[in-house]
Length: 355
Ligand SMILES: Cc1cc2nc3c(=O)[nH]c(=O)nc-3n(C[C@H](O)[C@H](O)[C@H](O)COP(=O)(O)OP(=O)(O)OC[C@H]3O[C@@H](n4cnc5c(N)ncnc54)[C@H](O)[C@@H]3O)c2cc1C
Image 1: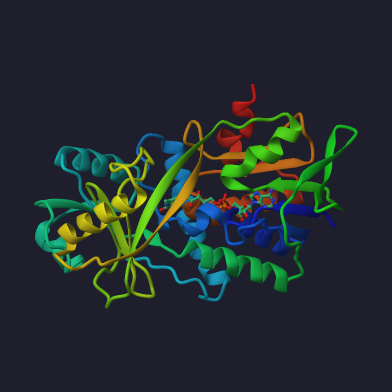
Image 2 (image 1 turned 90 degrees about the vertical axis):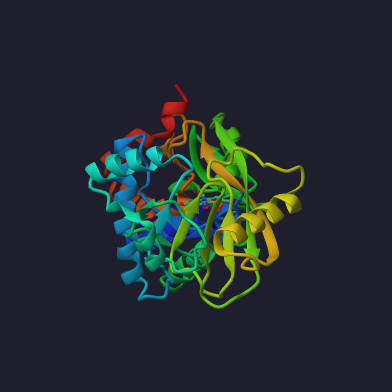
């Protein structure tokens, strides 16, 4: 039986661990100081394929959305997914029209709806343009709950959690054969680095440096309130949805382009006031905020796979890791257990950065 050590307990490490154990591998997970994941816990949790620049990446994300439905069934409905879709608009309607045309020509279920229809979908919005985009198959999830659920399920099927932080990789004859953790040595046939924005700490020991654009993202949370939103709203300067516990969660910018204000609390206040413009005064009472680091490989695409100079090592670093976790976990397990090379992973090979 192949022995795999998964370093990282965010949604990517947890998903890989779960899929490896159901595929028949022997699995040890080292979750680090942030079981449940560092970026994962501070993520907006939007599941989507709204990618218009790259057709292959769009298709990958579309397949990822199906994999969420598969995982939802596999985990007996324990994951609380919301599949109520999204409404999206920009200050320039042309951009929305063009994107809707393009994505729908690729088969994405997205269409323009009138203001009246938009208000039927989301009765609480105080304003929106005459036409907005509606993507009715998009979803959202609380990612840290899923990561924990996947880890728990993996443990119930025999995975071992070794609490702590992986200090170093162990090499033998040029191959990575294990991990050192607080002086203890664990050996494995494959070592997976799923440590998000921290990936380079361990990769450096294999003389590898992955260009990661670590952009911060701030999310503001309201106090709990009665349900006012069904799905996700993406409007200029604000994206927002409601969590199962009644809190609203909102951010300002998906690209991580930076903050508009000089302090985090001002930024959170700004988001709260944008939310109140969207939903009406008094509808977003700021309770808290979080700041997460987005693990974005330099070209924006996932970095996945083996490194030819460091056999035994397998790396997984990506943004949109929430959308991608189920498919990436399933296919990685397939590649590692069956030694198959995965066509869908080809364009995301980490080797593209190492030439
Ligand atoms: C503000 C924000 C909003 C986002 N919104 C979305 C969204 O709407 N949709 C979407 O798809 N994606 C979104 N993302 C991106 C998504 O959250 C990430 O792509 C995803 O969480 C990455 O998961 P991960 O498991 O790779 O990393 P992380 O969640 O960062 O987990 C890394 C894990 O590695 C562990 N670790 C680190 N070093 C070590 C070590 N030496 N030894 C052992 N363990 C170690 C940590 O303890 C942690 O458990 C967002 C991100 C942010 C910050």
